[in-house]
Length: 214
Image (cartoon, rainbow, N blue to C red; front, top):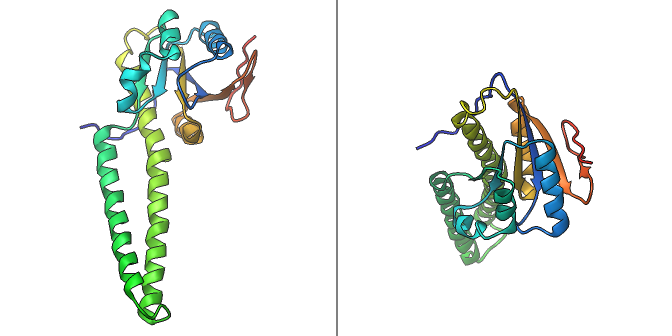
């Protein structure tokens, strides 16, 4: 079982180009855009945020076909199912507890009583905690695991990448993960380019360094 441990890659300058993409089907303009990036910067490999249940269907997408046509190795990355399962179990327990307390609160005749007020406050607190937990799991924690997976790929292929001082990686991910991915990568000394797919240019509003495609 893997442990979430993030260690920087030494002796290499790494650029991760993050593409905001909520699905893996491409228009013709999007295909041209991505092809230009990969060819111009000689991208070493691509990674795609993908749930385990989506792996088989991804093979049939035109994004997968484009990467295969360009001979760009690609890897599907996400938080491991065992880690997600454990956290989802904790969240489910908290939901069940809230449901029990709400049932108890509804059964009270006097909603202005001391017991009712305390119960209501406790329910509201648990709901806030539940929301924070869900947000953390679905964004920050997930982003940390994705970054770990990307770094593991670099380390796995370290021998074949030995003579390359600069690496370019392109990562496709839903928009809600972008800022947490950026923060985690930059904390490890990795340069980040965040871009939206546009015709003939990159939008690099959140980029830590700029990249242009002519």
